[in-house]
Image (cartoon, rainbow, N blue to C red; front, side, top):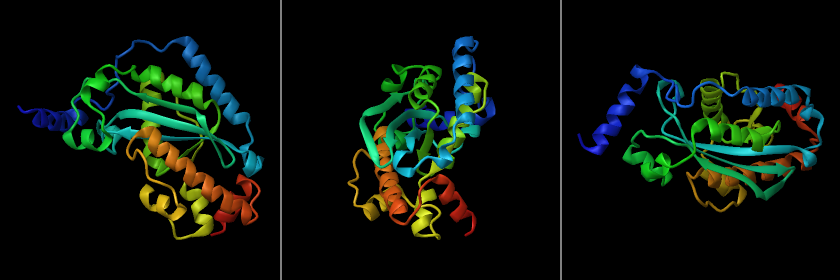
Length: 243
């Protein structure tokens, strides 16, 4: 088989051989890791982010690069990128990025799109280590993502497969604030929103690059929300619930 044929073969059989591509890669979950995750889950339940003024709201904006759209059919995460924000302010020096180890071949399409090659993935940290490092970076903050259903589905599967616990972080989609300006908006390409907000498109389809652009979009619409009189997330939720 040629390499492209092999890659296609793996994609076709991934759902048949089992959707947990992380199975058995690192043995039992470390009790200290579980304790850390449970403490985060407790903090998230105790936090009242809904009343926090928007100008003080702390979020972690993140993005995943993946091999496809369906984690239950064998698609998996290639990289995670994230940046912290307080209100509209992007913490440029407080970012997270990591590739995730894989020995599976990449399709030519995904390699070209993400600029990630198989050698990089073979030398990358293991998935469980990256996931724990990301949780340590994000702590109990709200997560923000563009087209967040994609990110949420992969994070839910990774967290269960690798840590045997549920993914419980609150994820807010960029459309949450955009709908305050245009109630018809459900889903727009990242490029379109960048053009709308006057944001330069840089490092597209790189997890940290996309996270940085998403953060700028979030900041732009957060500013608009405040100018329109919204003080906190609760007021935004209440308004959108009436639409």
